[in-house]
Length: 198
Image 1 (tube, rainbow, N blue to C red):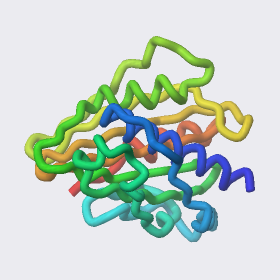
Image 2: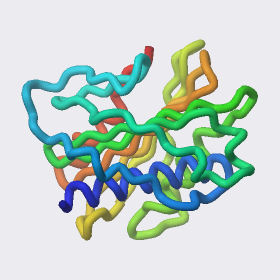
Image 3: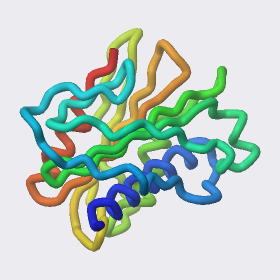
Image 4: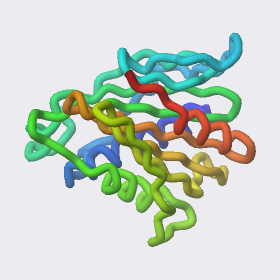
C-alpha cells in the first residue's frame, strides 16, 4: 500500500509539473490505482521502452501506459496539449513515473520552467534556490535538463531526480520523476539521467 501511495504522489507531482508548464492547475489529480506496482526483478538492468522513442535502463518493465484525461485540464489549456501518456515502475526502492506530453503544433515550453515548477512544489524542506540544471544536447535530436533535490514521500525522506527531455523532431516532451531514499536515491538518479531517446 505504501508503494502505491508513493507512486501516486509521484504521478501527482509529474501532473503538477506538466500543468504548470501550461500555466494552469489540474482540476483533479490523475489516478492509476488499478495499475499494480511492478517490483519483481527478473534479471539485470536493460533498456526498457517507455514508448517507441524513450527507454530507461531498469531491471523491470514499465507498467501499462495510461492516457491522461485531457478533460481534467482547464479549458484554456486543452488546446495546447494533444495527448499525455504516463507509465510507472518500481524496483529496488526506486519509484519511477514517466510521462510523454504531445503538444499542439506551435506550442513550446521551457525545460527550465518545468524543472523549477517541479522543484518549487516538491522540494522538502522547501527552498527558493533550485540546484543548478545539468544540461545535455544531441544536435537535431533532443535537449534535456535534470535536477536532484530532497523530497519526502510516504513520510520517508529521500531525493527526487527530475528530468525533462524536449524533442527537436516532434512537438513533444518527456518528463521523468525518479525518487529513492539512501542508496536508492543514487540509483534513481542514474536511471533517470541515463535515458535513451531515438
